[in-house]
Image (cartoon, rainbow, N blue to C red; front, side, top):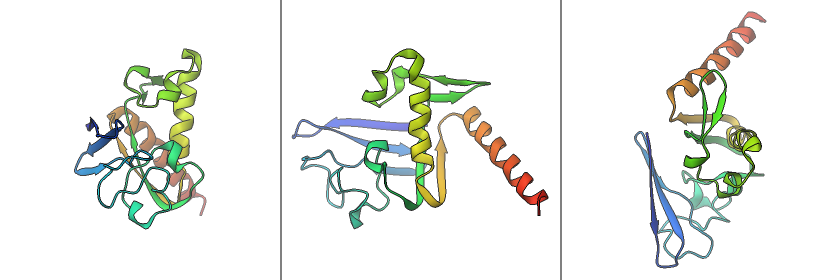
Length: 151
């Protein structure tokens, strides 16, 4: 399970420590925040700053960049249980949360699409929901089987 621990720094910005399985890191610093910590670039530079390696960004700070590999945390804001179901109450995306109900699921899917396709060589994904993980695995297994049989 993902454990997100938000805290308010003296700059009056929220920072978040993320713990997913054995992985732990602080999300990228908020622009102008002095308390992102040593080795943590400001949010608008994390993807291009050498100290940003192994740091956590979001769709808004990663968009437009391509990396060799990316890691994504697929939370419970979008789960697959026979169909896609969104949960706006646990979404941390304030922009998407404001969307009309009929647009919410598609916007969250688009967010994950951006995050999952940013790696040119590969993508590592941590799924908080087991059924969603199994759905993705079933699709990649089918693709690999199809590619193997075509050879």
